[in-house]
Image (cartoon, rainbow, N blue to C red):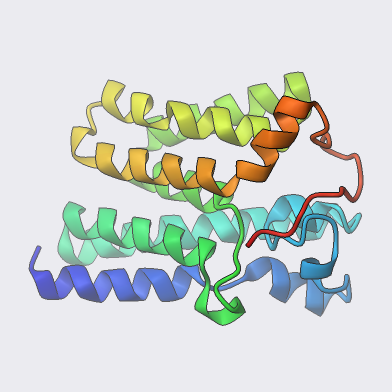
Length: 204
């Protein structure tokens, strides 16, 4: 992978990752401005707080897909190194989208989409961790934190040592973006899945 290709796929990945599907879908369905609902987040969890499960599912799928698609395209065109760069750039784009004033989501769906494309077994294990934690504790943020924390372990177990930096970097950013959630988890005030709009502070 040349420096030119790395920069090119970093730019393309960031631009694609910046597409705020939650905002687009909620506006098209007249669900209101997500930034003024619940946590103010543009991800699937906050879309669910509008009461529209279909919109939330669509947001989840599209946010995951934009990360996965960038990895697959970059891999086909320029190899595995470019795929990792493109996936990380798409993830960063979701967190800090140029199309939404750099105020994006917390990255969980895009994180999982990138992982599934980089290493399907590692991504699948991360999804299962999320589902298991969500089923047991009914807290989306706790499930996300657990899935992110274990992601580097799955990459190592499935032999993707070249992608460890990606797993660690994305996991760290997921935890940073969930700082307010972590405080509420400690205080036992974090809302549960399906609990409606919360008093979460909008991400800064």
